[in-house]
Image (tube, rainbow, N blue to C red; front, side):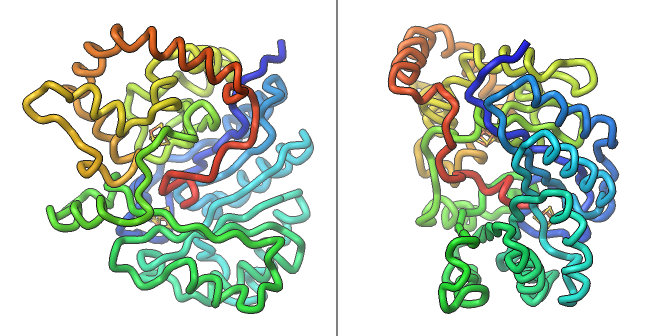
Length: 353
Ligand code: SF4
Ligand code: SF4
């Protein structure tokens, strides 16, 4: 039976493998990782979207999906045949020359690829010269494929949105096909390893830090490379508390039904993880403030990966239920619970391969 939800996009984390080893990588991808989804799981998760009319897009991320080119191509073909938009997130490590960029991208364009998201910033520049991005960008726009560039910035980084605009679109010729955004590094994954107190403070003071409601939870559903469904774009290594069942044994419709009834996920969607952390720690010996977080995924990581915060959450939830029901009803009346394009990304990833 077809069911409708707020969920508009399936995000497939194809593999954790990546030829790069960026210092801010929230999923800790590198060339030695082996965790990947097989072709059957990828194709079945896309087929399952047929029963969920609100889903209109399938995105592929990782790691870098281009290390699993054959499965990526099969996935894009299948999604396009079902009438779904498609996007892939990549560092463009495969675009060393113009010719190689065109040759690599062409089969995906022929299969129906609608959008490519290129990740570039100081952390990526440690591994790839910017001509890789220029080659990939040209190969895409010359075929009418939309390009999004996401720049993930540490406070003192040199590469920013203006730099990418000057590099790719100095005369505004590609305004209809190019979107460039900047996000702040969240202290998750590799970005939190060896993090000094001063780095943590600087990150929390960055202009781009976002601490509001999560615009991904319940709007995205991700198929993780470990074979689990997660009810958001899944840009932190999925804590057990966010996993909603195995791809092979849990139907997508059931997973989404369960997710939309979950008061913790509603709390994340309506008020956000920073607000949750502040509310559950108020009155404890260490109440948390906005400045303790450099982004919503950082707050989520602390909420779900710290057992004492889980205990505080369980304790606070019963008193929160009435307010959540009220918010659910209000958002339903004004239309925020219906299928509509989600606001701009507020997370470091999945606009990051
Ligand atoms: S804040 Fe980040 S980790 Fe948490 S639900 Fe939203 S996207 Fe997922
Ligand atoms: S940030 Fe992207 S390119 Fe860099 S290691 Fe992680 S997955 Fe690879």
